[in-house]
Image (cartoon, rainbow, N blue to C red; front, side, top):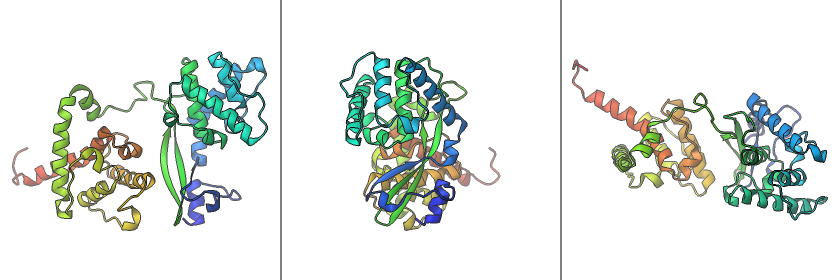
Length: 331
C-alpha cells in the first residue's frame, strides 16, 4: 500500500506517522480508529458515561480516571474497580512497576473478570495483549460487559458502533480492511433494525429451512453451471467468499480482476477480505435488506449466508419470471 493512500485511509493529519511495516511482524495486525470514529457523538458519550461510572465507584479510594485509553492498560484501576464491583479480594500485587509485572497483574484481573462473566478466554472481546497495548475498543468492550454485569441500570448510549480500520502486514506490504464495531446493543424498537424473513423462518418454521436452502442451492447451481462449478453445501462452501464473488459477477455482470480477491484463500484474513468485498458489491446494488457481518459468513453461519443469497435469488428469479411472460400479458 502506498504511504499516501495509507494517510488517506486513516485520515491522519500532517505530522502524524502512519504505522510502519517494521512495527508489525509478518502477519501481524493492528486496529485503528479514524478521527471520524473518535469524534462520533455516541462514541464520545459512551466513554464519558463509563468514566463517570468508574470515578463514582472508586471515589472512596480517591482514584480518578481521565482517559480510558491511557489509564486502564496496566491493570491497576481495573484491579480496584473489579474488587469493588465483585466485593472480593484478588491475589495480585497492588503496585506493579515493570511491564512484566503489570502484564501479570492484568492477566490475574482479566482471568477473574472472565470467570465472573462466565466467559472463556476465546469468547472475550479483550485480552491481556490488547488491553496492555491500549486498544480502546477492547477496553470499552470490557467496561461495557462489567457495567452490564454489575450495574445493569447504568444508562449507556444504545447502538454505539464505529468504523474501524485493520492494518495487516503481508509479504506484499501493508493491507487494510474496514469494518464496523458494535459496542453497545440495540435497546428500543426505534433502534432495532427490522426483522428479516430469516429471523422469522428460523424461529417459527425451522422445519422449512432445508427446503429454502435446497431452492437457493438449485438456483445457484443453475447460474454457476456455465463456470463448471457447483454447490452441495450452502452452509460451508460460501465461507471463503470465492463462489459468492463469482456468483455475483455472473449475475450482476461484474468483472473482478484476480488481483482484487483471493482465488484460493489460505487464511481467515484472506477469506474475510473476499467476503467483505462481496458484501460491499451487494450493498452497492441494494441487495442487502439487513446488515450482515462478514465474520458471520466466514464462520459458516447459515442464517447470514441465506440472507446474502436470498437478495440475489429474489432479484434474478423475479427477472426470469418477467422475461418468460408473453408480451402484453395481463399482470
